[in-house]
Image 1 (tube, rainbow, N blue to C red):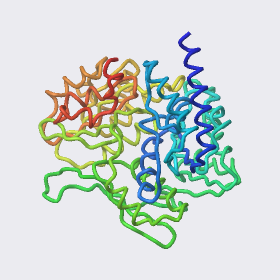
Image 2: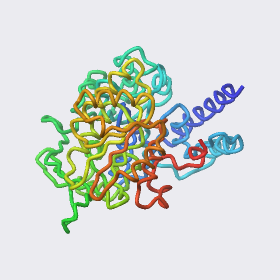
Image 3: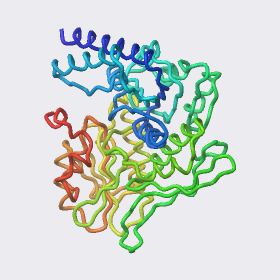
Length: 432
């Protein structure tokens, strides 16, 4: 009965979303890939917001119900039937009454199972499609027969591009770049490799000027055509943030926006929690909070970020289960353990699958005395309170279901600010 009611609600909201798109005719930017969708969506919004009246998906509204909610400008009602009714009536109001509606929409589009994106593109026709990255073993591959099938599912969005649309894709990921063969539309590339139309180089960690070793963010150079400009992102770390910023710049440049104006906007925008955010920790330590989700490609990027930071203390990796990997799970967890062993001084694992991370770390040469295993994220956090010393940098990463933000909560300097700084602080999540 519950699933039947859900299907009715989804049908009504999708129908309303179609009618709203038809009435107001906003330009639609659709972002997909297997990693970095939310970061990229937010970077695009930051780059364009000073030039256009624009709306973005809230949090990770990327499903058959999240996308219509974004188009309608409604919140997730979770299990509250009265709020769902309210959302439906708000949709009718948009359709039948005059409204000041955004000229641009930035929509995150995901796929958990075969047919998800194919069904969405039956009614959603984007003006711009942005492809982030896939990696050798993408997240959400569990319910697909192969990686190729998952990538093919994502390609439906490219095939749905309007005739005068544009595909903007990463040059650093082969499967993302191959998407250019799925369309006759204009293609624009971004990334770190030679040949990218919007290219980043010379990335550096930005430390404080007082010599205290405090990481303030990252700087890099952006090349486009004959222009080369300096860029800065504050309060974050890692190539994934640069990659997302490049995507935002590429979208703006495709619309002839000024790159200096966009770089100014990107330098000040507040990136979402749990995506390699730098947080102060207890005992003058530093936390790399990457707790939003995890996948092999994202976990590898996080380990590299941990390696690059130059601080006086220990490098501690706290790694939870990577979910939805299906038959690839054991192998990928072991690979992650080997990577971690080459970088960290101490490894803490959380979850049943993460025990394979431990096995990989032992193969990689990390001393067993420096490896600790826990079932629950909060338990690992309480243990870390006694392990952390001044100057340590602690990477915390794991899939959504492992709730690794509970580890961060135990070791962050200002837990009273957790509702603003950590992921999954909604009442619905906290009650789980």
